Length: 106
Image 1 (cartoon, rainbow, N blue to C red):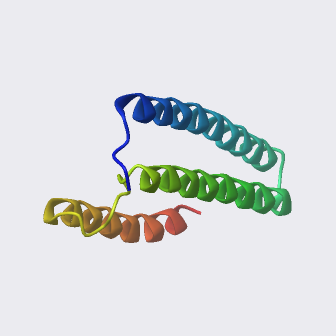
Image 2: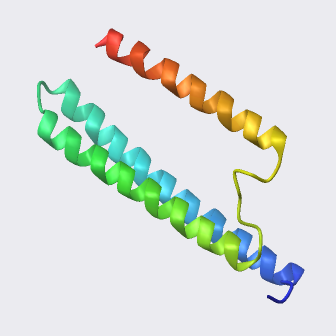
């Protein structure tokens, strides 16, 4: 793999910035629509569909950014260093705590 130039990296970063802005806007709009469905009463089927679309957009964004990072040799690896591993463990533990808390609020 050849080393990317600074200009190549800048173009990739600009493209990823535009992509993430668009994806974030899409996800925000879908979340707003889901909120409106819930405000209007018990309309869970459309909310589940909207949540599926949110997941789809998030997955597509993650895959695209990861592919671009791999193309320039900068893909994130969970085994990069111990500090990152510790951060990931903390995040995972917090996510396990949040789920029971969320379900108790329903």
